Length: 84
Image (cartoon, rainbow, N blue to C red; front, side, top):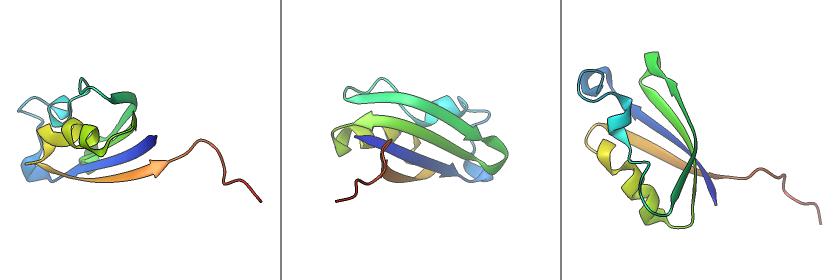
């Protein structure tokens, strides 16, 4: 399944001087395929498109940012809803 993840931190918890935005997620988690990564840096917001079949893989992907960020995980699809 595909997921759109929005990860947000505050200016006070910004990792700019402590590893940068790459320190907020782990792309090497088994069961996760990182498809896209985008930043709205002035808004302290990251966007990810990932493929995963297990919510625990998503949690492990986001775990490095758990003390700095909140995340919204939304299932998404590349195809429209079929008409019956």
